[in-house]
Image (tube, rainbow, N blue to C red):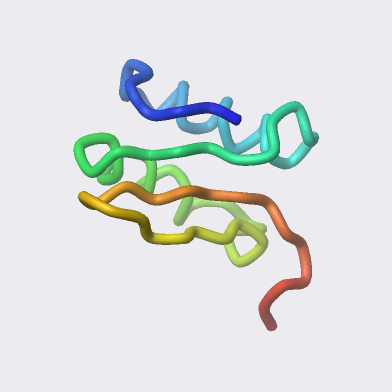
Length: 71
């Protein structure tokens, strides 16, 4: 699990998405402040629909990688 508070860059967001894909981590927590950069990278992924975001309190989103969870 990776919690928010990491330095927000597109490169770091791409690394975290790859870590989810390869099961290095099971979830990534993104804060409200980190969300715009993270989302920008996420929407460019070919397998974007395999990432599942669960909204939490105060604008935090917890992402997991679940291929096939949606059509």
